[in-house]
Image 1 (cartoon, protein in one colour):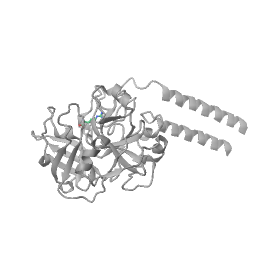
Image 2 (image 1 turned 60 degrees about the horizontal axis):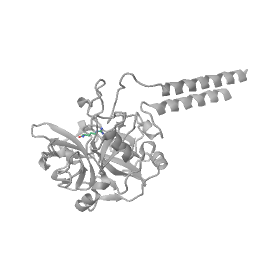
Image 3 (image 1 turned 135 degrees about the vertical axis):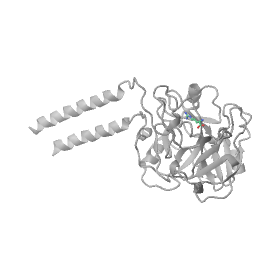
Image 4 (image 1 turned 30 degrees about the horizontal axis):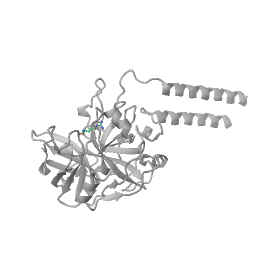
Length: 352
Ligand code: ARG
């Protein structure tokens, strides 16, 4: 009798397995699937990224442009140059137009007292001449030093497929019909998403000739996870040697989170000579490029011991796939976990 039950349960588990695999591999979505967060990420834990800085830039017509930056020393915020320029490559935003909120988390909870005064905007000297966002770097100098822990900068270029985390308060959703970024969907809470670094060859193939050596791409070929408008200037970081280090800055894309397109990031190592000249006290992480496996194992979202230098996040909602060797968007890994759980459950029952 127990043997029959065992056999039945085995057959049931097997059928369940087949059903799951079939569901997983079925060609997905004739309809556009809903997108959420940074795009496809999740809310960061409050104070997980103390150096993250929200930038509100006042335009001449009274509108506000939203960008992000990263505190890299007590009086310096690193961001992108294009936030301060118009389409004709002319600087239109100056220090007096900038309100910076270092360590911001919830946009709705900010008060004027949370802002830091910006006294100067430095644009990378090679940005002004260049078209296409080459050398997309800017530094903002603050009037007073902050106690907030500053971010560290990676000295080594990232490895292809190395997992990297982008953060920002930008657009979280796409128009379900046009798939264009939905302007009304800016994040209230700082968002984060983990995506692999793309090889330079694939980046150029997908994004065209405008990609220079001073840029890098990140994202999944199938799309679904990306930074988006409003995230510009926010850091892209890798976890190396027990802490996060910045490797890029959100710069541009073609739409957001589209398949066969990648997010383009200003490549931090290209700006290191300029940054260290202006900010000699910047913290450089000299750890070598991480092994892929190591990065996956140490990825922040899986770790439970939070430290300021290596922020952690146990809220896995919607971003677990980023830690898979071959992740799929849409909670694929959840399905696997559920499946494994069910199999284990059925075995346990059989035994008892
Ligand atoms: N240029 C945009 C901004 O100013 C950033 C766009 C990033 N796009 C992307 N697909 N990753 O906010």
